[in-house]
Structures are given as structure tokens and as C-alpha cells.
Image (cartoon, rainbow, N blue to C red):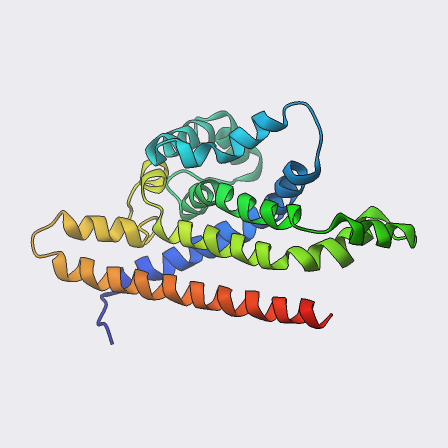
Amino acid sequence: MLDLTPDEWNAVRLSIKVGLWAMAASLPFGIAIALLLARGKFWGKSLLNGVVHLPLILPPVVTGYLLLLSFGRRGPIGSFLDEYFGIVFSFRWTGAALACAVMGFPLMVRAIRLSIEAVDRRLEAAAGTLGASPLWVFLTVTLPLILPGIVAGMILSFAKAMGEFGATITFVSNIPGETQTLPSAIYTFTQVPGGDAGAMRLTLISIAISMAALVVSEMFARRIGQRLDIG
């Protein structure tokens, strides 16, 4: 077993915490935006699609800087949240979760959208003819069918959060115990003499967590697929 220092354990725990919060907080928005892009017909749909996928194109540092301008204490959104709700993102672990959520959001939306577009609309129409409301059709027909895509999107978002570096370090810096995630800690080790051993330990931990996430997602997707086949 790897003998990690307290600071290294803090980085591991913080990375998992940030990844889970980023994934969970962005999931409802991811489903809504994916549904809107897959089924909606409105002016500006291409623009919305471009905005959603913008973090994949922009350098992560640029995304982090834009977050700092918007959600920093002096930013329009950050100052409002701080003054009226006491919510602070900049240089906090919550800011790291926000940055990771933004960076992983396009991957989540794309996976869910592809799953929605693969649904046979005739099944939804049949449920509608039986008197089901659009919301009930979505909950009982569409949602179960797109569960594999939702699981895939969640895992992609979590994996992106575990590996995010540029946007996070720009928005919330690299504060041990507060905002220092695994990538930041590995980077710190590579910048100091004799830090190769620590960087290698955390690299192995990152690989193990990522592999575990992929295995779990595969298990969930397989079980969901079997239930749908049985149904």
C-alpha cells in the first residue's frame, strides 16, 4: 500500500470531493440542456450548442480566468453571491468544483444528448396516446432509455474533474488543504527537488481512481442494459 503523507491524502480526498460535487451539481443542468439541444427547435440553438462546448475549445486557463472575472469577489456574479448569500467561490474548494463542473459539462451534455437522440420517438408517442403527460412520458419512458447515456456522462464529467488543472489553478490557485487537487499536487511535486517519488505516488492514485470509475460505470451501464432488455 502506498504510504501517503497527510497533505497527499488531503489532495486525494479533495479531488474526489470536488469531482463528485462537480458531477452531481451539473447533472440536472446537463440533462435539461441535452434534452433542449436534442429535441428543441428554436432560434439560437446553434449558438447555445457552441456556448456549451466552448470549454472544450478554449484553453483551460482562459476558462479559469473568465470564471475568476465572473465569480471572483469583485466579479458581477461573485460579488452578488457573496453579499446576499455569503457564497464565495474564488480560492475555495467550491470554486474548484465549479471550474471542474464547467470543464466537464460539454462531455456530460454530449453523452446524454446522443442517448436522447437514439430513443425511438414512437415509444414516447405511444405513451402519449394512452393519456400520459409529457412529464410522465419523460420520467417513465425516455429517462429509463437514456440512463446508459446519463451514466456515461456522469463518469466523463467525474473523470474530467479528476484531471482538471488549468482552469482550477487559475480560478482558485493551489492552496494545500483548500484547493490543491491531485493534478495541482502532482505539479507541485514536479517543481521541487526530490519530488519525483511524491508525484509518482499521486499519479498511481489518480490512475487507480480513474480505472475504478470506468469499471463502475461499465457495471452500471451493463446492468441498466440488461434490465431494459428484460423489460
